[in-house]
Length: 111
Length: 120
Image (cartoon, rainbow over all chains, first blue to last red; front, top):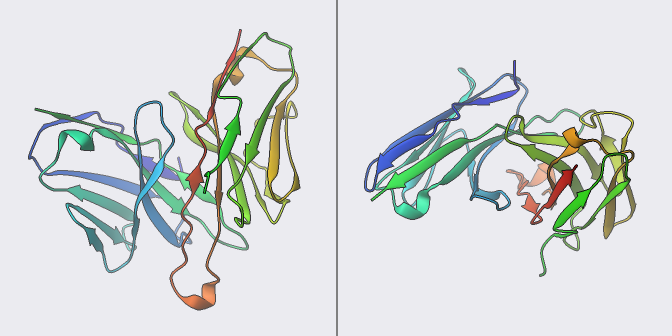
C-alpha cells in the first residue's frame, strides 16, 4: 500500500463548480500535511498547509481528519486557471523529516 | 532570490553513459531533497540531506545512483551507468524548518525547474 494515496482523476468540471479531492495516508505518526499544485511541465508549488482545525485561503479549504487519516481539499467557484494536478503531501516525522508526495489528482476546468 | 537552480534543464544521453545532475539550493536552506517524477510512479523521494549530511537514501533505486552535497550551496545526483528506465524528470528542492519549540513548523519545499532526462 502506498504511504499517500490519491484518486488520480482526471476531474473534469465546468467553470464555477465546486470540486473536492481526498487523500489518505497510511502512517498514523504523520505530523504535517500540505497540498501542492503542479502545472503541466512545471515544478510543484505549495498551495496550502493543512492544520487540524482546518484552514481556508480564499476559494480553497483544507481539512484534516486524523482519526480516519485523510486530508481533503475543496475548491469553490472554480476558475479555468485552477486546472492543474493537485498533490497531497505528508511529512512523516520521527527522528527526521520525510516528506512524501501522493501521485496527484488531475483537475481540468472547462469553460 | 534566484530560487533553486538546477542544471541542465534537458539531458539526452545513451544507455551506459554517466549522467550528472546539479542543484544549487536557496541560500540559508538546510534541507535538500532529490525527487524523481514519472507518469507511472509519480513523485518519488530519492534522497535528502540536512546540513549537507545524507539523512535518508532509502529511495535511491540502486547502486547506479549516488548523491553528494559537498557544501551548503551545491549538490549532485549521479547515475552511472544510465539505463532507459532512468528516463524521468528529476527535481531538486530545498527547505528550512522552524524549530518545533516555536509552534507550527513550516516545511515549505521550494523546487527547482527540474531536469528532463532521456536515456536512449
